[in-house]
Image 1 (cartoon, rainbow, N blue to C red):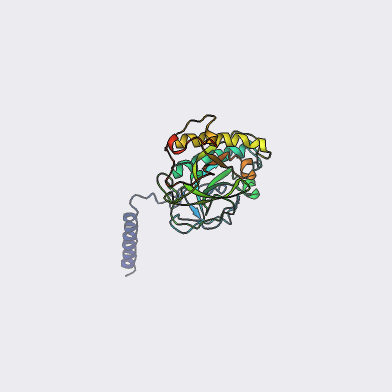
Image 2 (tube, rainbow, N blue to C red):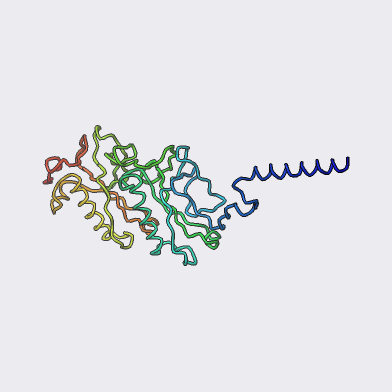
Length: 297
């Protein structure tokens, strides 16, 4: 009886071993060496192509980072994430060549993202950087953020939107700047109000002039190049000669970025034609000299 029980246990053990071997086809029996190694931890870097429900901040921390899909309501869209040199020990200060270079990259990326110069629409571009602790931990990124605003005039508010801004200015768009009605005082335009071009109006957005790298205009003489640059943009837009008579065809309104944005490299000046003596209906784009005659008085 004891010999029979021993024989039975040996047979059962052999069967278990056979089942175990049959169930491990393709495995080498070592459960540890087939797992991929975990990636080494690295510094936090935000993603591009996502949006943020919160307002823009120029310093982004990991704790405050909460991306959402751009189909959800949001106030900021990240169009690109670039990188500063890894060897830089501290974040670049405002006005530095590095920060101006980051803005120039963001400027080009944002324009490509929306399909036209982003300044041609009710949009604002800004650059966000890592926090001090993030930089110390190895973060070297800069984030290019676009925001829709209610107006490009003073006192603009951020618009909560749903949907990406990709290709938003590639064709006709409610975001695009167009015909305007001025509110003037003291011989100068104080406010531009968007209107339908089919209604009577006295101003129109004509494009963007890129100012050279010079100090922000503070004296009357500093503004002369901006007016001259915008007159050239106006001439090309309407289709009239850019000559000494152009100033007698139309007034011009210039809207440069603020001093703070100028300091970080924004040199895009929004330009508007201004008919200070009459109103028109319809756009003057490509209308030619007949639509914008030289005024003799």
